[in-house]
Image 1: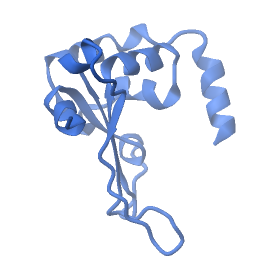
Image 2 (image 1 turned 60 degrees about the vertical axis):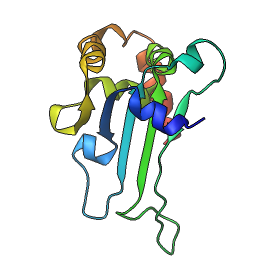
Image 3 (image 1 turned 30 degrees about the horizontal axis):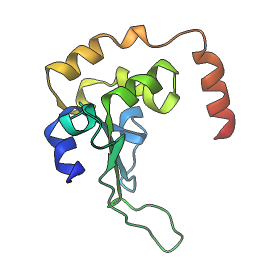
Length: 136
């Protein structure tokens, strides 16, 4: 089964994340993209599982660091995304507050999700973000 094509066909949101989202990119920055897709019939009816699909382009320099040609690109299944957002996962939560210039693709379902962004952060967010910052 071609999960990549099915994920693309069922995509509801795709954004730039990382340095581009935060306005800290440089000419040497790689591109980080993240998106969400609705589950397709084979997932809903239990024939297959697919929580995310990767479309990465690997381009490294001599030191092993990503170059500007590198692309980190993931599409995440909607239910997994919502679960992670409800847990206030810092890498996931910021996607809900994306600014317009960093939206690559959005349909009506994606717009509805973005409109509900404020329902996800909760008091547990503080501890999750502190632990994330410490780990970095």
